[in-house]
Every structure is written in structure tokens, then in C-alpha cells.
Length: 113
Image (cartoon, rainbow, N blue to C red; front, side):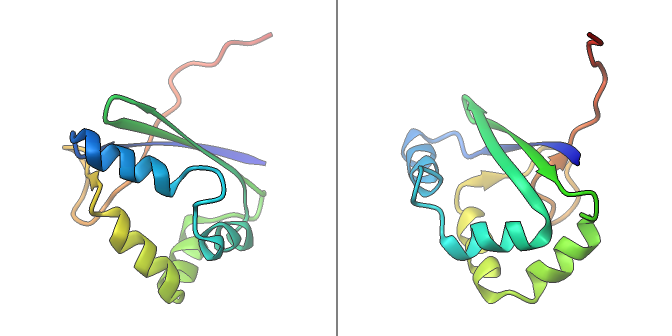
């Protein structure tokens, strides 16, 4: 298993944040999107929010690759529709590259048991 952590901002608007959370409430995410993630090798995906900053923790199988996921995304119209909809709510972080949304975080500490 691999684990990746990402960050992204939402537009700082309570109404838009509420709408975004509603899209991600249990049972509300589009089933095509959740199945697509499973097919890409994402075993578990969680999103946390504080204010308008979000953090995503993504556990994947050992064969997962971002290149494979990007190719699968590009070939799936429903994924493109979802991503376009999500841009209504999301704001790239200041250091994001053009068109980049979720930014991969660097692990800087891990406590050893």
C-alpha cells in the first residue's frame, strides 16, 4: 500500500463550502467517480477541512501511478464533468502550477513506535 497526502483550498464562501461538502456527504458522491477511483487503484480516500483549506489522504494499491490515473481520467467523460464542477468551489494554492488542483504534500515527520 502507498499513502499520499494533498492540500487544496476552497473558495472562502460559506455557501459554496456548504455545497461542496454536500457533494461529498455519504451517498452523494457520484458513483461513477468513486468506482473510477477504485478502478485506478485508490483503496481509501478521505478529505478533511479546516476553514477553507482541505487535506486529502489517499491510500492506494502498490501498482497505483499518477500517470495511469491521469490517463484514465482523461478517457472518462464523467470524471471530466465532475472535475469541471469541482472547479466552481476550488482555488489552487498559490504555488500550484497552471491547471493543478490538489498539491502533493511532503512528509516531514513520522513518529516511530
